[in-house]
Amino acid sequence: MKKGKIKAVRGSLLWFTGNPFVTAQSDCVTYEEDGLLIIQDGHIQASGPAASLLPALDRDVTVEHYPDHIIMPGFIDAHTHYAQMQIIGAYGKQLLDWLNDYTFIAEQAFDDGAHAAAMADFFCQELLRRGTTTAAVYCTVHPQSVDALFEAATQRNMRMIGGKVMMDRNAPDALLDTPQLAYDQSKALIERWHEKGRNHYALTPRFAPCCSMEQLDMAGKVRGEFDRLYVQSHLSENEAEVNWAGELFPDRSGYLDVYNHHGLTGQYSLYGHAIHLTAAEWQDVRDRGTGIVHCPTSNLFLGSGLFNLGAAMGGPDPVNLSIGTDVGAGTSLSMLTTLGEAYKVAHLKGYSLNAFQAFYLATLGGARALSLDHLIGSLDVGKEADFIVLDKRSTPLMAKRMDRVSSIEEALFVLMTMGDDRAIAATYIFGQKCYARAEG
Ligand SMILES: [Zn+2]
Image 1 (tube, rainbow, N blue to C red):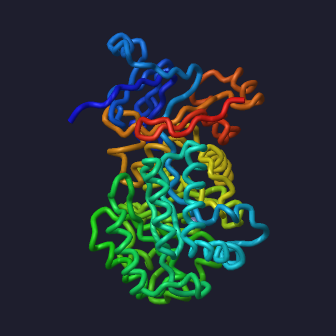
Image 2: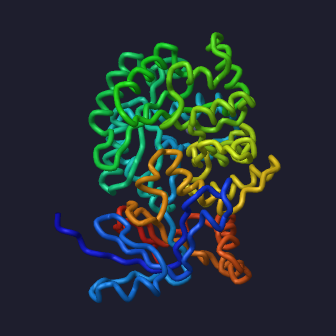
Image 3: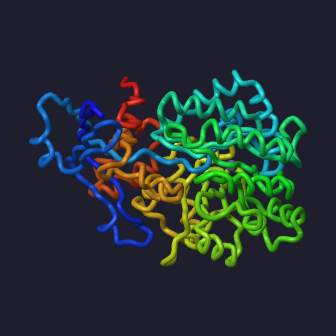
């Protein structure tokens, strides 16, 4: 095959090669203050010091130069609902009332394919504007909502995970499927989208209280019929929900056991929240490698509780953790904002989340949680060139603050405390610049 044109991008390169929750930082972070990224055919061909790579570069290669900017892998948002963008900031409810009063109403509109297409297109653009290059996304119960998401992602060549919500009880009739319908529709969508281009399918039983045992059985059955299918759902978010799950599934030893019982945990699973897990459940999550997604802005907004980061990551055997915005209960699609809130939540639980750990979770840690780290999440040679350009001085106040910063770790911590979409100067997908902040 004929090789494509070479591109080069210059700036401060930063990426992770190991897990800073367990490994000394000097062994797991790569930082090149004046670095060069060389890209060909959507993949990273070289990454390292500009001084050593520039002399060997063909003279006709244009170098895009971002002085004083940080170039890092694109963010991975491991839990979000694109159908809930229009209910961000809906006032005054905790989880179960919030679902009934706001979410289930907004999601009914996705019966209309044109509405779904418009929202999916807007959603993908908003992700790029915030430096998110991959997301695990809940669609709605309607198959057309899944087509819309994957069509919008495919247009931008984004690596995207998504799936049709499965729910057959405890929601308005217009949003219910049946186990058989969920099976047929999910299977058709998997055949249409799973591992086609950069798309991946996630079986999406909304959460145990909205699914009958037959529905969860059906999800486990489909999972067994395909390779590398994801499962995404919610777990132990809110105390009333945990109690309700206990009443609905009296034969199970706890909420997590419901999902274990139906074969929906382990590798390729992503469970949002996990705030109220017991010690035995934490151990079970570790033993099976079940993915947990921490969604701090959502947990604060709905008053669900404070995620115990120390229990998840404090010991020698960290869980398979990633970070999610959980829009629309989450209040921002920005992973920078989300990392800043994760720091505060951890702080309230007696754990100090440092900047390297935080950015690891949003990049390589997320990729590992999704079992996609052989493709994305770092700037190592051979990886797909999904990366972002961060502007450390994106507001006048941040610029003043950065004047007093003396290390890259400090700069990253300021970025996650003060940064938002304005700090994303550019977003590249598979080597192509797909978003550039308007200068003005
Ligand atoms: Zn959610």
